[in-house]
Length: 335
Image (cartoon, rainbow, N blue to C red; front, side, top):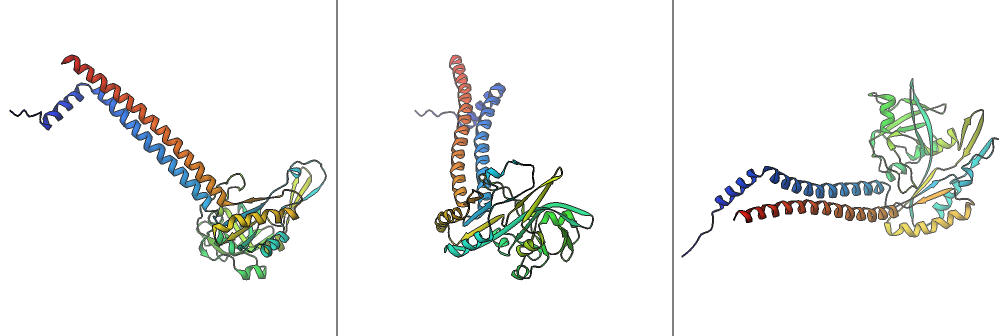
């Protein structure tokens, strides 16, 4: 004698009837499943997105680059006298030459001088950053021209009064007008615009050793023109007195051909600069180290968020199990 069990349709009807008889209980069980699963997916997605964004920010600095920046020494930070002072610190052209000639692993070396200046075109003004640099800057920082061109070796050699605008500067000063061929005013000198750069995602501050940098608010001029027209001294006037800072180079960026050469180059670079600098007036940043630190931190965050999401899912599961247990106990009494 063969006894057949209930059909699938009968099981489905009974299950649906039970769910409809206990709407609140069923809704709470479904809510527990949705919240637990949603918490797992959301936390892991947020963690992965944050990790990728941090890694992308550091990768934009270049894994094969080493960045040296001028920094005001601690003893020069406080104003100890009311008399006029000239503070001279930071990287020099002698440093640039020594680095270029001494370290054999260097592939490219880029000098840079940056100022905050008011940029003018007719009656419009924009407070941006003026960067004196060389043609290598665009290649190292992955900048692409939107209109016109970037600086050339001839511009640097001839000390030409030419400028390349970041996208935000061009939009603020010229609107829908084509800036190429027009003249802008910087520090009482006029510069002919030869190009506008395409949008470039700004870089965030990295590890406290690099400030955030928005390339779209920059104006690029030949570094030779920067030295000749603007000079190396910045004068700040306050309450009838002035302080002056003299910095030859704001930054030197080095590139090597392979990541395996980054750390050996940095190990040579540190003692070389320390030999000619009596105070800590520079900071060396190795993006490759920042990248590896960020990857380790991101991994820890991924584990932490996974644990938090797992706990949320476990709590939801306990709630569902409690409701199911109550249902079974109720049916047991009925039977």
